[in-house]
Length: 181
Image (cartoon, rainbow, N blue to C red; front, side, top):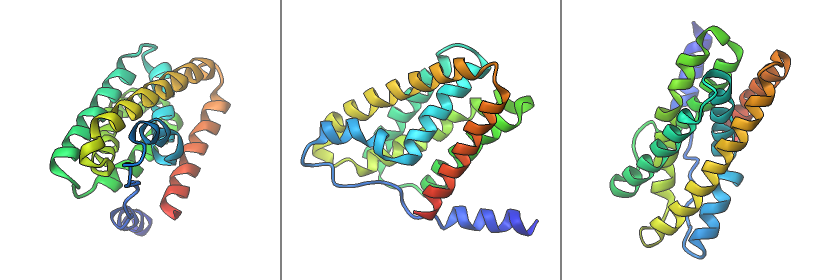
């Protein structure tokens, strides 16, 4: 119980992962952000992998992408929201748990669009008002590609339980790096 409380307190105290200042070249910044933000990169790849392992359709990646853009709009309009960073870290933990607990994989995978909403919210907050649409076009495009790459990787991982667990370990290690940073 102590470990659970400690983890909960750590997650509540996590600093913002947003990377503000996308004024100089908003399209380039939008295109690069999902690749350079470890939290976003791992969530997108993890969701793509889960989509391939659970339903073998692109419905989950499309819902995730839509939720991410919806979150960006909300972040652009409303600004920061309490718990945004916690949900971003939570997405990595849930994706890893889904890979490590196959009996709960579908249920946990279905939570990923909710987490994507908060990833998008962070994007909406970090984009400057005058550059929001251009920045968003970039991050949505690359996010879609990363979801597809994850889906392809998930198709390859379907028959390899050991590699699935290794990928889950990578998600957990990534979450630890994001927490430490």
